[in-house]
Length: 134
Length: 164
View (cartoon, each protein chain N blue to C red):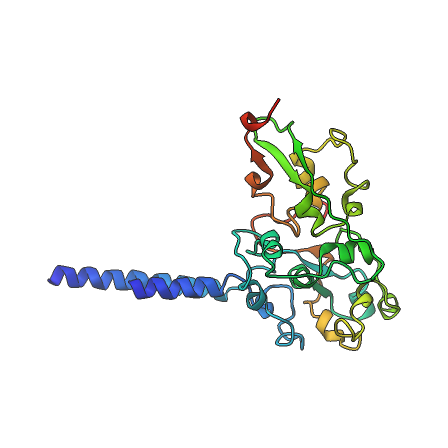
């Protein structure tokens, strides 16, 4: 009986340790979501935080072809020279971010929400760090 | 012990998609945090997968779990192609089956042809090194489409199943 109790106790200790490890893992800042893109070709030079573009959010609502075919976004992070004027004129992001399909350009902070100093790049943390050219 | 396991499983599930404030990209002080949709809220509702966004996007589309728009301009022609291409020069790996259907559900022909892929069987000198560099299939796979650790999803046809 005593042996059983001590076994139970040590199992309890192990499970508590496991719990702490799991809790720590969820709290540690690890990774961006797969396919997240930082756009900072112009933003910080012009005094705004970098833009975070989440592929996951957009692909629930639009197929790739909408942006990469109709709107003409080149499939390489940082290769599209997009200005705010273009967006206001309804080009690139401005095709939807016009207060009709999605929020308009007055909501600066919703797109320009990145940490300072990040390079234009594709991020995301599952298994592959992303191809060399990115 | 059981309780510990259950709790740790719940915690693990909750940690599967990083909160935006904690993803190393968003500024935790940004006013966008709390306004933008959190990945876990949307992605946990979709067919699960083991890599990438942990979502099987093709299945999500096929099962109607999502219905993303195909075009914005009414005059845009939405093109779907339903043919498979077998790439047989894969060394000792199983043959690659490229399904046009799954790809054209998302993309237009011109996204790949002719800028990255010549529309002729055998005309594209593809190899895994180039793909790892982000060329050919690697333009999307490893960046936004399922990552390059998922060998068998492309190398899916055993050589002895190919009719000569």
